[in-house]
Structures are given as structure tokens and as C-alpha cells.
Image (cartoon, rainbow, N blue to C red):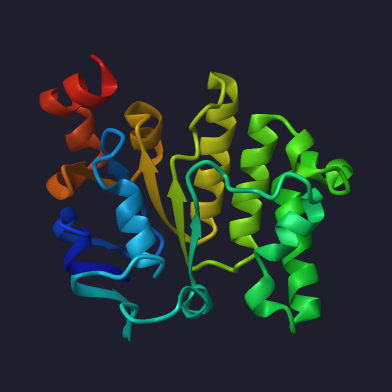
Length: 235
């Protein structure tokens, strides 16, 4: 289980996260809902060790992640797919994918097996693996970004705004893939502004405002919550 206990994060004098408590059981798909700039990405960057928590604990199983290097956190099984994809556009699709397995670079056989799994998950990438990542459509680039994260062999996958900038049909396909990844046993934390699509595949969700958790519940309770519907679903 991944657990955040009273986690705070500061950028200088600005408090980005204030006493965040959340958890995800093994095999859950948990959604973080909130408008742009409320702290969803900050939560992920703090879990990943890119930003250092000002206070609190982040644990995966019996391991304390606060104080670990990002590469060590990946090796524990917690892997992030960042907002905006963050690909290397001049590099090939294959090289972008293989970068995701860098911490396992000595396990050549394991990385090859994982690459085969990723290409099976995203078959459209197989004939494009030698093309530059920057030449792909936005939807295909998002596939590469998720595939790169999967090369890190996640037990917990942090997906930050994967639907950003995608057409409705591509969003539907992307969320179907995310659900398949979760159904294989991978725990997924999904940060999304597209509340309707995210809640449809979620087990539970948290609502974040101004760096605080203001609401939590299962999919049905949040889908039927009038305040959530007005603020995030638009109905």
C-alpha cells in the first residue's frame, strides 16, 4: 500500500501541499481530482522524490520514500508518467521507451521482455519504433509516455493528466488502456481534470483544492455528489 501521512510541501514561502493524507491499496485505481494548479502534480513530484516534502511521511509497504533518490523510488516500484509527456522529440520511439528501463539497464533480458509487453499494449507503436517521438500524433506520444513509465516495472503507476490535449476518441482509448494496466494488478494513481472519464474507471477518488484534500469517497459517491458534479463534471 502507498500511504501519504500529513505531507506538506513548500516552494519558498508558498505552501503547495498542506497536510495531505491519502492512500492506495495494492491493485486500486485512485483518482486525484482538481483544477489546474491545486497541487495534483506537486503530490506526484513529492512521491517521486523530485521535490522534498517539508513534513510528513510517504511509505510504500514498509519503505519510507521521503529522503530516497528518485531512481531508488523507481526501484521500489513507484513510477511516474509526467504531465505533458516530457518525451525527447528528436530521439526514436524505441530509445524513449528504453529510457524508462534505465534503472534496470543491466537486466538486458528483462528489459527486452518488458519492451515486448509494452509494444503489445500499444501495437501501433511497433511499426513506428524507429520514428522520432516528435513526429507522432499527440495520442501516440501519450502512448510512448505511458509505455516509458511501464518500462520502469511499476507496482504503483502515477499518471499525471494523461488526457491533456487529446481528442475525445483518443481519451477514451487512453483510459481503456489505463484500466487494462490496473486490471493486471498495477496500482494506479490518476491525476485528472477530466472527472467524468476518470471516475468511470476509478475505485476511489480524492478531491484537492489549494493543496488540501477536501473530499474523498468511492466512485459512486463522488459521481453522485452535487458539489463534485457542478465543479468537475458540469452536470
